Length: 287
Image: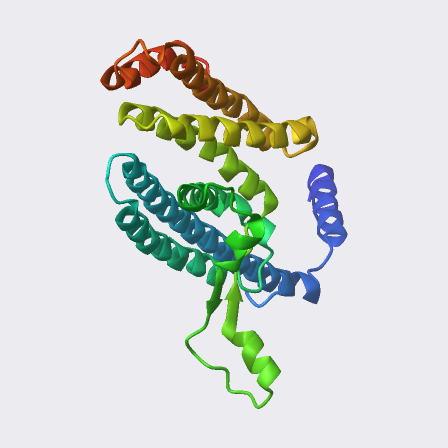
């Protein structure tokens, strides 16, 4: 054996000796039954469960939004029908169906943190607040409170808990959903746009008193939102611009009725207001 071959063999022996033998811990790390892999599998199941729940809540929110919009479209018919009770009764049935969807949301959120999934269903809840507050205004000419809305979102479970404690049994039968103050404010802010449309429709049907009632009511809402200003949630401050526009259109209609109402035929009033409102519509998309 030459000198070079001897040195090569010596280097190979050193490399082999410097390599650390595999320990039992390394074998466990590569094993499918490793504690680390088991923990990550648990995390995977938990995340998949939350993602599936989030998607179900998004779908429920879309259904609530669609049905609430249909209810709002239905309520706009009160300005053109002789008896508003039939329209309000039909709207009650539609809102009962919406509440069944909200009950499903409450069941999905049982034992969960509401704010973890709030973004998934907040659009539907805001639309529901808009619809139910619109119906309440038509019926009572006042603004529905957050407490009144939440009082209608208390549901009773059909199945009974098998327990001897009556207090525990009663607690498990009741299912509630609480609308957050932010969702309530955003829904009320959207209500002002529907009231503005109701004002124009009322004038077109010869109702001269409703625009003045709406003007006073919208002014009160605008004053309330002005007190909040920039101190409230960011979304509320964004709605303030649209709210101010709706108030301006209604006040403009009232001004026209008061000053030029006797000059313009009743069947042309709606066309006049619609054309005047279109002049200030380009900025409506800001909010």
